[in-house]
Length: 136
Image (cartoon, rainbow, N blue to C red; front, side, top):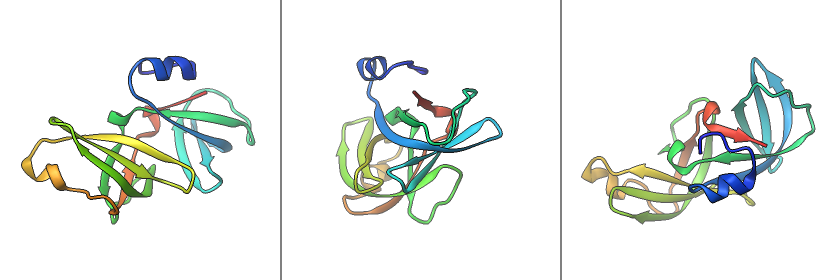
């Protein structure tokens, strides 16, 4: 579940987001993948991947976090909320990252204020720790 080796396994076990991109550089045990030629994604990996290689990234919805648009941190990306669905313990968000790519994420509803925190059309930041992204 945590480290799927193929898209089939990642899709078969649990929910997954898939983003395609191209490796642009490697630095200190991490690589930068440019998704849709505009969104830099930092991925922690021990694999040696040459610049220019096309890869698929796998992100689990529960590994991503959503913050106000003013938030800035490593591996944070701007986006627009396309969908917000309350499902009891969690709210499931779909966030558009680029014209071609969006991801689903889940935020646990710990407090009543969490229920309506982000609305469709809101500008937000999505954060995924580099070590929580798989690559193949």
